[in-house]
Image 1: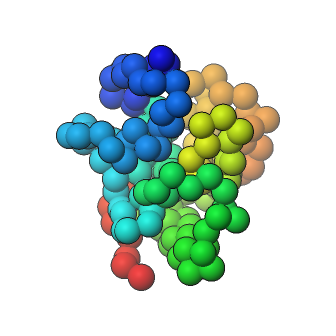
Image 2 (image 1 turned 120 degrees about the horizontal axis):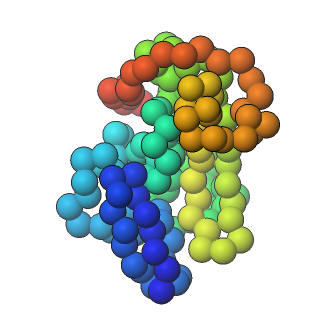
Length: 151
């Protein structure tokens, strides 16, 4: 067994082979802060489930897909458009000037996901995050991503 800790303080014990993405996809009655902010038949966008950085969004697949090379061309195109739209709204609505976009293909319990991690200077200080991770210029502004335009 292993334990997942979530943004709302929830601690859940799950079998060792359970990945966080599949757990969230199949969890009944998700707390509000873990609810997807957007989804379709292939992808889900939600606030990061563990790290309380405002505007830290995760794009993950609904199905347990491990690698971007496992996507169909149509899914890869859809993902590219989705990343663009989320980043556009982060810039235009949330006024986030810099974002680290990270594609993570894990070796252990992989579940495809992309991080869109805003570079909030005050959050870096508050959570004692190594500034080497975020070495870009940033624009500080609070806000939230309300909705994405359908494509």
